[in-house]
Length: 481
Ligand SMILES: Cc1ncc(COP(=O)(O)O)c(C=O)c1O
Image (tube, rainbow, N blue to C red):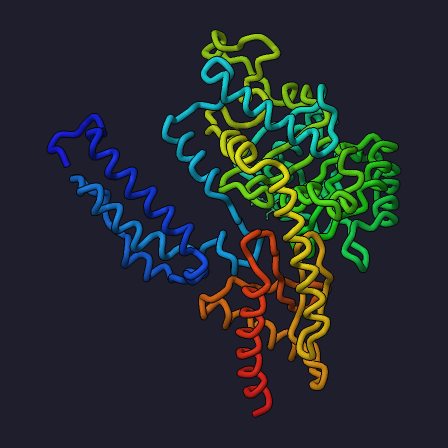
């Protein structure tokens, strides 16, 4: 390390050495990831003891810092791309996009306005057009924007819906979503300043879909009370069960009632690339806005969400501001400034990874990967149904499956079953061999797998079930004694 380095630079040779060390580490990780333990554990005390220090006044040799990070930071982070990371919505990612992200960061490309980086803006336009076509949105009128993730895409959508439908006065506006909608929607609604009384959480039916009858009743009642139903949030692929709301019917209701139709397809919408998914997602093309997260089932690394809209002018009407310091870079209207289509001004070049991975692998590889994921979950379902120990609680839907340990010869009560399945999950996670957590369905504790990683194999899942059964025997012994 040079003594005086106020330019924050390395020599060319040092940059190369450092860069190759990092690429080597990433490649090694990709090559050996499946042999590692996916789950990282660490208490605040343990992390403090590893990392807590004052900001160092003096620098350290770069390789020394890097080695410390590789040894201590990377090994203490759960691997969401690991084949045995089944929980939440995993992030399978892909190597091409990892490198594309490094390139975008390496050149530090500003993806806010056209004038600064026309090619970056154009690639965002092009890739958004690919997505518009995939989802059957209008090619010319439609538009969209890449965001940091699904939460920001939902917030961008709801901000747009409120501006277009309510203008400045939203005091009487009400918004509808189901009890299975993702929490980021409620967060967005709160961020936008809606009061509790303006939010209608509609109960779902036995299949965990938006109840149409209850929705219709609620809208009618709100109108009678002089309120203004302005937006409905449907989900295409609920986080819990992969359930797709009745999109065709909901679309019709929104059209008839002149309500903004937002679909949160953050994890599930990508399934449209498969035959089964396309069938299930019928009606998605009628949305006014659609959230879809490339960093979930389009296999992109974090952070990449996306909002698609039926009419791109709705985004610019909502987000365009014209400060004097941006007047020289406004450009003409065909040259999109993405800072006018969303919340961020300075934005990283997210489109690049999507562009490079789609160009490299081709859409067909993506279709095959998604089809594989859906088929794998169905195969797991049929294996579970044939087992004496396991019960399918909710069938495989868009690669999500919910199940619980419930051996036929035992006749456990609900409380015991909850305790057993909670125990299994806790022990599996503590073993660090698989990330398998629980959720609640109709009040029951169930285990849930979201199988969107194309590198997860049936063998991985069978090994995990064997592990679960070992822990099940443990707790059964405890219950029996
Ligand atoms: C249906 C749904 N919507 C929104 C989100 C939030 O997305 P993000 O975590 O990218 O902000 C998720 C995350 O799992 C999701 O499953």
